Amino acid sequence: MDSVDLFRQEAHRLVDWIADYYATIEKYPVKSATRPGSVYSAIPATPPADGEDMESIFADFESIIMPGITHWQSPGFLAYFPANNSFPSILAEMLTSALGAQCMKWETSPAATELEEAVMNWLKQMTGLPDHFEGVIQDTASTSTLCAILSAREKATAYHVNNNGFGDQPVLRVYCSSEAHSSVEKAVKIAGIGRGNLVKIGTDREFRMVPALLEEAINMDIQNGFKPVCVVAALGTTGSTAVDPLAEIATICSKYGIWLHVDAAYAGTALLLPEYRWMLAGIDRVDSFVFNPHKWMFTNFDCSAYFVKDPGCLVDTFKLVPEYLRTQIPNHVNDYSNWGIQLGRRFRALKLWFVIRSFGINGLQQKIRQHIAFAGELKGWIERNGDFELMAPVLFSLVCFRFHPQKVDSMAELNRLNEQILMAVNQTGRIYISHTKLDGQYTLRVSASQTRIELIHIRKAWELIVEKAASVYHA
Ligand SMILES: Cc1ncc(COP(=O)(O)O)c(C=O)c1O
Image (cartoon, rainbow, N blue to C red; front, side):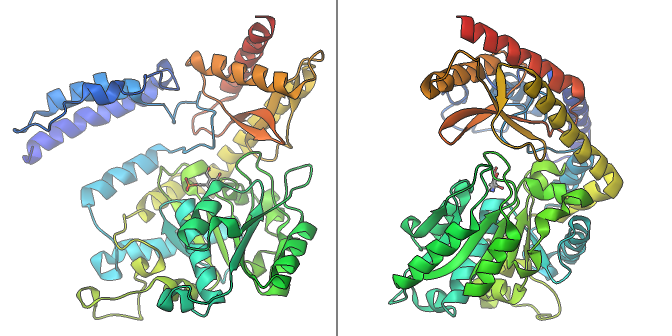
């Protein structure tokens, strides 16, 4: 299909399809009910020798692919954390794909680099992050956290590991709470530190890291000849959105000269609201910070905002300039491929720019406050129902709770009941919720963070959960 006219015709058709999809998204079962292997077995084992027309490719998209899609943008999608998007973001992604620019260096698309600088400065202002931070867009929070741990490793070893390998370096140690996201453990593995050297610190009753336990662990490690290099604090843990006490953790990190990285992948978006800036107490002593506009800020996957106090350390950790990448203008511009792992980079700043301009700060704040209010409504219904209980404080748009009828006490039985409720609810296809375990207790998670979610969706979700709880319990 290399005729522009044919492309125009097909593109119009697809835009109509996309608009219809969003207009009717609630007719789809939110969670795909496809059986394992069914999509794979519908795809021919060998690729076509001759090109096919869009008509037949698209027909297969509808009949084979669509049934295997879980509808993350449906207002019934209440699982995990969101990966929400918005129409301005989709439009920007269309342009990104049309331009097809690979933005590894300033020279390979100056506008992409300079727009990235500008929107990262906007984000800094919008979230109340310190002015001295500098930002770069990574693909995911996992990558951002890996960059942080690699930078921390290099700073602590005076770039010895980069240059010579671990050799006779002391054993390096990294710390996070027992509720931290698994991306921290993955990063520690990849960084060669070894997952056995990730120290998981205990949490309090609200699942926040206990600073005294952190300091104790650091002291013990130092006595044993280990070298503490990095602490990862979470603003909004994955399980229950707990917020680690940053100021106290920062004081410990400063005292022992340890890199402090903050993972605010989901809850960082709440910093757009001045009433949530209390989470930032201590941020002036933080070395690196990540939050994902691709989670809760209406910017479609992927877009992770990574901020650092010292870009020099980041660049020194990653920079390599072989002859074929040398340009005439070093030192005057940012070559973002030196600010992370990959060389090739997508033009992600464009969608952030479209989203921020299209919503405006007020529009973004309004939507986020609405989501938090919806979670507050659900919290109230749970509190007023004697057969359910909250499992964690509701700080943002996530509610953690479980069915707990008065006559059932055993944890195993409660876990079994709640697991069955989750399955029964998700099987309806009307909503999709997920779970976690908090203190070993099976916990239902409802995240009210969809771009197009309204109170009615939360109301209906709650009614469905209550109905399924009753039928599972009386079965
Ligand atoms: C707190 C936290 N950190 C990191 C991640 C990983 O995010 P990503 O998929 O962008 O790597 C998640 C994912 O939900 C998360 O909740």
